[in-house]
Length: 362
Image (cartoon, rainbow, N blue to C red; front, side):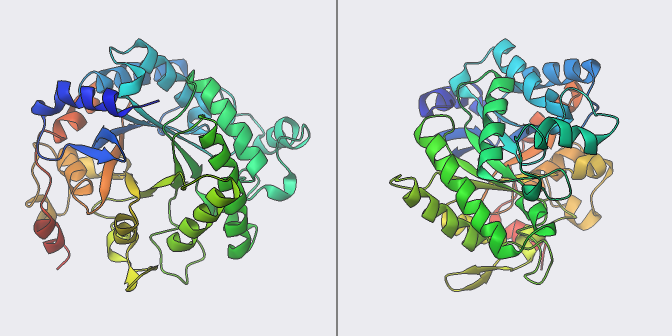
């Protein structure tokens, strides 16, 4: 797994090439504030080849954070991440690898009948209970997530991952009550605490799309303070001295700034945004959709664009996301080497200061 010695060695090799606060502290590690995502793209050999080259280029250019998930591109993204880490001119302990479990994954290609596939490959063999499924394709039951972690380690070819997310737990709100989702998260967190104690993961968290950035009365809402509380209870149940719940992921960009503007989380002194609560709770924050899945590469709102440093719109969008308070790393998906180089170059510019960032919302 990533180590303090390895990641600080990596920072030492590349740090002078980048702007202020490009490398940031994550617990005892040094990680790049621009990370590579692997969500988009068809599940084909050609896209695999593109991703392999893109990831290798990123790792050899100053990006040491790679984010994936078992369901991305029918497990192909995890597999190509593992291949790229093995091929790149980096040591494993220099690279921070995050993956996720929750969505039922296909294997290599999308089946003609996904419902039949899930029933025959997962429900009937007992890999997932039909009652645990939401929307026929999502489960966060501890036994299912435990199995998914094993599959992810095998796909990646790694002994451990640096961060393992429970993927979009708000999906379960389509099938059960909010309290039942919290209860299931606590059970799954307990299992992940045990896997952390066994050395299979270094920390865990939740990767969300809507849960933490919507108002309390929204159907997809989950309370981050309650999730943290359940993680602490899970650590006690697993007989760990402290929780390994260390990170959240949520979308954040110029057009999706709810994580900063919507004060839906109950903090010690009143309502707070998800970003502020996470910051004060000592949680690491990873932003997804940092360039709006490519949309912001075509341009940002003029009043925001003029405040940001960067040669291209994509770079300025990345620098907006990583300027938000408490953000550890902004993830950008890219399977094209030239896009990777453009994204890496965003880090050669300084992010906005706190006052300049706040002024965007005044």
